[in-house]
Image (cartoon, rainbow, N blue to C red; front, top):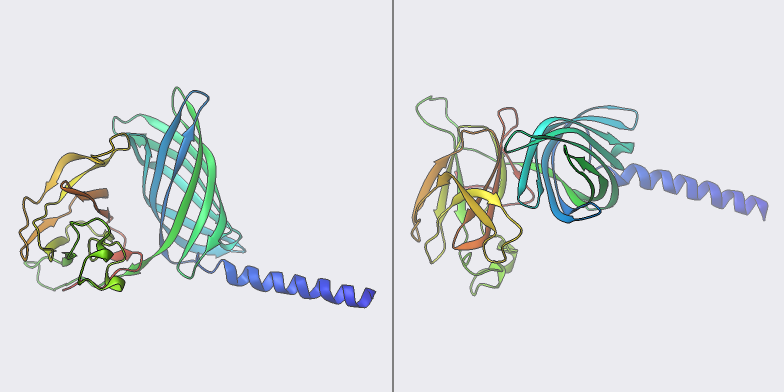
Length: 299
């Protein structure tokens, strides 16, 4: 009986080790990821909605710790937006834990410190879900944060390139047919597998500054694209335009182009159909990639 029990213990130990080695392969070194999450920032007096978006790249691995660097961070507290100033991130136990700490700044330059610690909850082949806890500390308040966040690999896409300096690199984004109807995959005549509640052929990208984005309207109604920031307190208007980007009306079958020169995180949306959202991460040091499993762009 003792021999049998010892054998079972050894088998379970080996099995656990094998499962561990296979489980956290979604955070390998020398890759680029996006971390997107939402939750709450809590004090004794208030509970605020909070969101986090960041892009991180993993570098060398030492033991079970993976060194990584953050390319961009966008954190909200209700209608207050923060960007990264000085942040550090460490991936522990080959992806079982993620630690983020450092300084962020709001739009007026006021600083806050953050200390987040994430634990792996569940994962698929290309993404993982983490539960984060920690705090955001401003000059006059300390918030306890609680997030659920998704860590996803960035999948490379092709961008039309040329050796001529007179021709810009271009990326074509299609406004999908039926996008004016919320829940695009229910649009009559649109194959279910091609939509999956998507309104753009790619709705989250990371590109270098200066690349031209061409928006092609494949829908049966006109659309327009603005840049702005997300708000959480208005039931019907989810965004406020910031005046940086405005395409004007894009008629069915027509196209227009914009060039993103400013580094950082940019959120685009259609003011008439505000479920149509597009996020761009603009960095000089990251290859052109699309977040998630979107279609390949047209050239």
